[in-house]
Length: 448
Ligand code: SF4
Image (cartoon, rainbow, N blue to C red; front, side, top):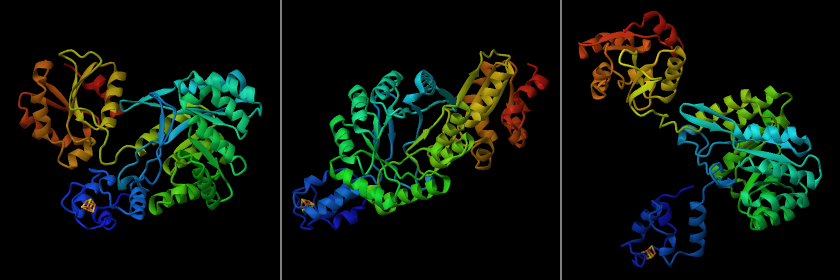
């Protein structure tokens, strides 16, 4: 947890000797709190002070990187329990597990999962990796499957409790920085050696209790492994929620280092059906999994989970916004319809999608409402007649369309009169309240 300047000052010698380049110890402390200077600039901090200040500078949940390159997965480094307190920083990694006993069908499913991509509010949402489980118990089968999946160029999780099989697989893919899953109380010494030798993060599995999990984490840390992922083995809804919440609280509120790591979950192991597994995955994305490993790839499950994740990991103080301006939907001409909306991305993409589907190439004027939706921005005074009229003039819409008709969102029909006063040369039409009705509205009412 970050310390204030005053809290840091308590650990300084308070002699004001100026050797750090600052006139007083307090001035140095203030700069240190802003991360504008290194602690090492003061040669007189006691060892105890150094330890306390270095511990305070550590993030409560360590950032763990799996894989490398464009699609590397970063999880952890969260600093709050609740999104509204600040924001969540590193979205839960969604990974699909295949078994090495599944043959070509499993490898094909891995390829489909790795290639899956869906567009939402202007972003391409994707899965984050493939977990390969050594279900066959045969090291050569495991290595063959891992090698077959490696070509998808997504982060890998290697799942085997057999250290010899794990090393054989690491010899082939260690440069891709896979997550090693998992060290247990029986094999942690060998697994920790592999993690250090191949410089890969290591997951630890300890289902007995959180105390036992913390003990195992400490033992692994004592071997010199720093990048750890926790599996408390809590599988069903209630146990998972309880364990993951306690781990998060211990990390954030108590800065308890042995539990200050991201958590990996396996919703398929705590559910009695695929539907229940999807619901459990949703719970774990919300609270507080770093990585969720799904047992199947199905776009009908993955799409809503990716959407949920996007919503939770969007900064609540910065809605996803479009750049204000005039957008061409299709290839509009001078006689094509012109509508106006706000720059909240979800609103824009809902309307743009319906316009595309309507078969009417159109112009869409997007006003700057600081990323708020139509009714929210109207009620906050950020989407009014004066602003719309100003945007119409700023983006020279009178030169783009020949008909001088502007379609208002139905939710703000009340603006029509004022807008007619602001734009006396224009005809203001009131469109539907819902984006889904845009196509029907144009078919019935649009004539240029
Ligand atoms: Fe204080 Fe250390 Fe700076 Fe001297 S070098 S003024 S003791 S902070």
